[in-house]
Image (cartoon, rainbow, N blue to C red; front, side):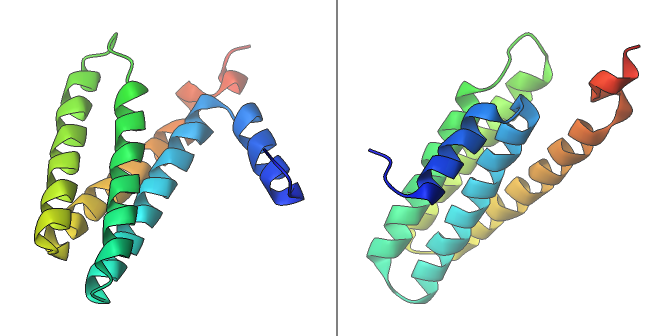
Length: 129
């Protein structure tokens, strides 16, 4: 149940955001969770590391679910996302942040690419007149 005004704002933001913005929000969440997970490893707070690395995996699973398989790039992205999940699992099991940092780098790179693509003139509705 939503009780606070901030939670209501977040729900409205999710319900009204365009698809490109939702995708960026997923990437932002995954990036934040991987950073928190690696922070947990650094702090030797393994419960925190586990919780956040699992949350990052859940977000990546949502990215997989959002793939549009009508486009050939979806197969490649699927493989990249599966690799990221594998690396996060390894990081979590071994309490080694190196695989998670690799995933973080990929997530940031992909997020930036999607952000750029969403701002390109060919993806804008303004272009069609």
